[in-house]
Image 1 (spheres, rainbow, N blue to C red):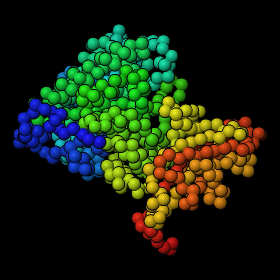
Image 2: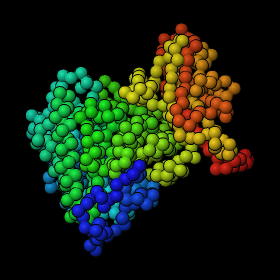
Image 3: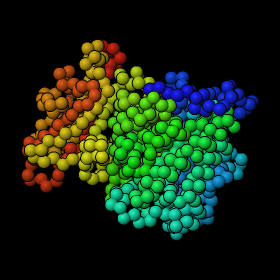
Amino acid sequence: MKRRSFLKSVGAIAPGAIAVATPGSAAATTTPRNQDGNDEPRVFFYDDGRHGSGLYQFEPPLIPDDLNAAVDQLVDSGVDTLFYSAGLEGGTVQYDSRVAAKWGDNVDQWNHAIFYRASRNLHQLIADGHDPMNFLAERCHQKGIFFLPTCPVGIVGGTREADMGIGRKSDFVYDNPQFYIGKDNDPRAENLGRFLGPNRLSFIHAEVRKERFLIFEELLSRYETDGIELDLSIDNEFGPLCRFQDLDQFATLVTQFIRDLHAVARRAEKEQARRKRIYVRIPAASTTYWKALGYDVPTWVAESIVDGLVAITPHKKETRDGSILFLDQNLNLAPAVELTRETGCRVLAGLASSTGRQLAKVATPEMTWAAAALAYDSNADGFGFCSGMWAPDGWPWESEQYTTLRLLGHPDLLATADKTYLAPSQAMGAGQGGTLSDGRVLLPRTLQVGETLKIPLRITDDLARMSALGRVQSVRLWVRITNYEPSLNEVEICLNGQALPDALRIGSDQHFRVLKNMVVGPYGFAFDYTLSPEYFPTQGNNEVNVRTVKLDPKLKAIRQLFDVALTVTYLPHRNFQAAPIPF
């Protein structure tokens, strides 16, 4: 894609102004660059400022270095951009704001020990003269990392009786119930996420827009940031920030909101001699989907009022009735990529990495590399993590996390990285799957005799070429079915129309298998195929078919297709085995 130059975007700034810095200023430190040496974000990390940081995990009192750990862990990791949460869903913020309430400002009696600790740590740092926004921005720039604080555009109210003791909600949301959306009789409102209920504040009201605007304006103008991210989700769940009947009005208002912030960013660039970007977190979806939420993304891009789109799964949902929580590797990035072609607007793919599985609760390195490879294959400009905390093996990170991060900015290295492609499947115990809005199948799906379940899998690997070079160590297809014993039931499994012979597989019995500290769940059986070259999947779209031939009628428990995964592992060179001798 062609990308407009920085000088074109800032226009009126005098030549050389961006390079000028006063001694001791943040601008005098290392200029942020991504792994290609460019001056725009490529590999990002979102930190909610709480879970994987000192606010929750460190005993008070803190010093600035304790929160600098959020930056220091990224140094030379492959991550070039930190999206750091400035505020919470209830309107309070996590820095020394002059325009917004800080976490716990209005609380005398706490009912949540960890939230109490976070507030104590925050207020103590500020009282000691250490504003987190200042020292995090400075630390990022010392280490050559882009720093973009992020904040939700939508906020949620409640009552003091129910919510005061957590400190996350401001007096503004408590004192203004007249701005709440209230009961929305539109049927679409019934399936919104847990934060998108009647207590969310409507963006239709000027007072609500002003309350949000002042925070973003402050983050752009008062601090040495590299821009902001406008998070249109609330905890990665999307819904209109108004009643459905007000969508057209909301679309006009939120676009003007962004225009006004764009003007603030341009002024702040001149004042600070620092590039000020506006990124917006949106669902990876179609223009029709965006319009249904009131997001006029085409206008934002056409008017050049946004510098980047952070596209994440639109399907993460925690409703009042259940949960749809799964690793979504194959994001629908085509609409955003096509829209931004020949513009200066970048598209970053964001991974929500929870799997909802027993052993790997967070995406493995191989799953993460597959997601990144798929994003670049869809012409994304970058990739990163959008969940509030990424700590697969705990925090602080271990060596495996740095191994994972190192490749994420390099599509050429990802091409021959080991990968696991996982069909989207709900968390354990989350209920019945279905069909997603983009047509993909969501597992688990119930088996019915005579029916065939069709599971698409898109991969980026050129297995024919790499196999000819002797570089493919193994290609494995793993199909997991619940409440299934092969001696009592029968399925036929095909890949791209070819029935996979039993000679290629081994079985994995998962009926009451006792592991350390747990029993395998759900009960069932897995078919583990090691594919020979004539059965290799193709680069691009593939389809796994599971046809149910026979089910044991004596068992009432439903049999479900629970997981479908394809794992590709490579050799560094032909016949170069990791363990060349067995003893």
